[in-house]
Length: 398
Figure 1 (cartoon, rainbow, N blue to C red):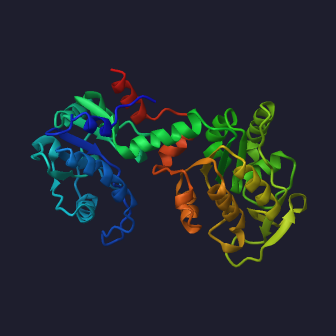
Figure 2: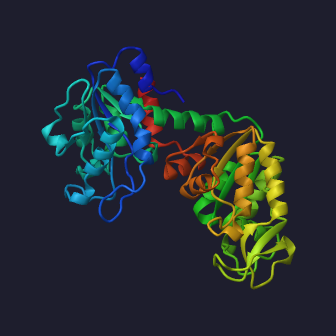
């Protein structure tokens, strides 16, 4: 994917003295008092900002926060807490500028300002052309560094990139593009994907897209239960979608036709109730009782999957394979996580539960790339071209 990158412009000396508009993803969780409870996204935005500042640019950064009503400012929608935290990380004060579209932005080379919540601007979500042109007029260089919103064609993620003099990707977005290309466009084989979750229906398009490309498709959670049903196994009262058996069978057959496979569990961990303290029982996949809940894959299945992952060339991971939040049903996800960590394969992981599992088992440094955008990551797995990628590619092509 050919795109222009901010670091290229810096190396070419084209950033000094320029007005640089950075669209970051600073949509961080806050408690009821407005305190930031997790600042990963703010810390991830720092490299792009520092790169532009050190190159002598006048820097503006903005983001959405929460779900504000366009044109109606409320204190809880303000980026002020984010600006304070960013200021702490950068060791400088970061002023917040309100009404910046209509009033303009006063910022000099070497300075940084935070533009108030971009979703307060009327027309942002619907990508108003008038708004996009006004925002583009504020800067010389537009930088998209917000992969988490790359799947949305909005004013600050798409429209402004159409009309800005120069449009490029920041280091965070560029890293996502590189990792996705490495994992899906030019993967080292075998390519193994893990797709897990409660429902086949929410991941059906992903499963269909991957089934045409991957060498192994590992399914987990409620999705695996539906595939077990499709394979003729009983699943008791486990979560599944019987109305999607035909789709699950089609995925299995599509993989088989290419000499690839969807491994079906040979053993499972069951309980009689969905609870952390429910007694766990390991059973052969053929021995599930009518009143059983399948809450994890069994140790034999986990070992089979671990061997496949350790032999992979590329791994794409989205979702834990069991109810890993309950220790009694966490072994499958832990074994899979450890296998990914120990594999020599290039691995890319994304999705909130996946990131929680990575953190739980302390394998952050052993995963090739951890994606920062949940929805955007899933749309990439579906085979979609993200709007932010599309417009930057168009601009790079001239």
